[in-house]
Amino acid sequence: MNSTITTLGLSLLLGLMTILFIFRIVLTWYPQAELGKFPFSLVVWPTEPFLQPLRKLVAPIGGVDITPIILVGVCTLLREILVGQQGLITMALNH
Image (cartoon, rainbow, N blue to C red):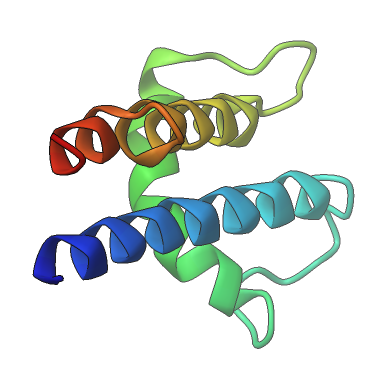
């Protein structure tokens, strides 16, 4: 029971982060948006700690910050590998 709650929590967390990174992608289309102000800060606050170190490794392509796109892929992949239908945690709990 406890492991099911943990798995669900991890799945929801990774799903939420994916959605937040998608919102960050959309925000890049609006450079005039003031990211420090509400409601944009609700998206910036939880995602910036992940984006900032990655920006040091991945340069913008054609002036476009692609780090949120990379992290959407990472979160989606982690969610599938860990708690997907045939994920590592899911398989371990079923055996």
